[in-house]
Image 1 (cartoon, rainbow, N blue to C red):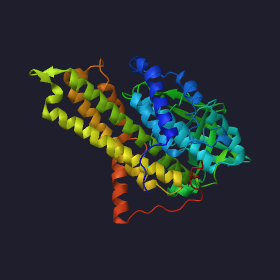
Image 2 (cartoon, rainbow, N blue to C red):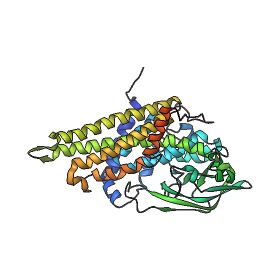
Image 3 (spheres, rainbow, N blue to C red):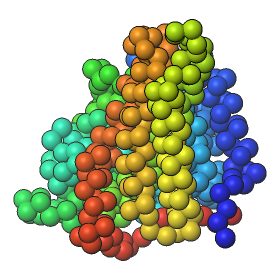
Image 4 (cartoon, one colour):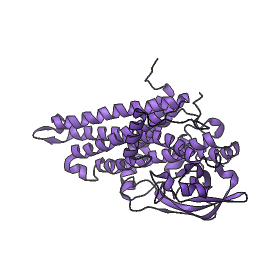
Amino acid sequence: MLDFDLTDEQQLLERSVREWGAREVQPKIHDLDREHRFDKGILPQMAEMGLLGASVPTQYGGAGMDYISLGIISEELEYVDTSLRVIMSVHAGLNCLSLLTWGTEAQKQKYLVPQAQGSKIATYGLTEPAAGSDVRGMQTTAIKKGDRYHLTGEKMWISLADVADHFLVFGWSDLEKKKQKDPSGISAFIVERAFKGFSSGTLKEKWGILAGNTGYFKMDDMEVPEENMLGKPGEGFKIAMFALDQGRFTVAAGATGLIRACRDAATKYAKERKTFGVEIGQHQLVKEMIAQMESDYQASRLLWLRAGFLKNQGRRNTRETGLAKWFSTVASERSAGDCVQVHGANGYSDEYPAGRFYRNCKGAVIYEGTREIHKIMQADYVLGYRQDKPTRLELPPYKA
């Protein structure tokens, strides 16, 4: 029997995050965005509410919430601003859930526990200057010498690059396989900012998600203890793709929140602004844009809820999560464009939030799989060219 109602606990979570965002972030997000300033004070508040360890079991310092709750948090945060949801994507989705699934008990105690509690902040380092969708094009190497790996390389477009304490990093540990571009030569590592040879910087020229920290980090012959390898040698590519299943889920839910923000802002303005003697909401083509936003919102929410349901059941959901991410991010771009259009000339002004929505939406159709990559993937599933092979480890199902 299908049940689309949220549980009492999920409804309480939804209200709590919504009220916190409206009270603590909404009043200052315009200025933070204009100043290109990341407010680190947001992190302790998120930690106190249990958001940073949302779907991490209580035994590892988390809040023990289910995966649908992680989606709820992501949707509500991006309703306020995309920069807040990005924190959940890289810290709670890409990093924490990867450590939960692939980490040793020692790694979980040392890294996952403080991350889930929010005393340490984590992120994900896959993208490089010459390697985005083409993961095999990465140049980072991890050369084993004794009981340590020496990492050399640069990661680019890293959320929280100048904020995070811990990084999940990928590099070639088999140089022969690197020459052949065989992804079974890639391994994953847990890296600390304090490791010698690590440095980071901020990207200052981006034009969206301005209230979020985005940057790069470099590793110059950085020594990483052997015990900091996540998974087994050569499992890095599988872990990277696993992590993207979790990150894409939060992106899909977040984009759904952005669609709702666009819908609400456009609706409010359409009832305030008058032209030709009536509210512009009375004009049919304005109604058409608002109706499209509502349709996109409802469809996007159902898609990420389905993915969350599958995660809760411990079932493979790469296909469903990818579809949710693709649909919702493309729909958010359409909604943001129409939101600006409904606002007319005022949509071109920072006096209203429409322009910020428009700038923020674009990143999500690029990162964690471009819209083109996802379109090809979905076609390949239907055509039978693509099938998801089992991996050694899968995301643990939710246990109440």
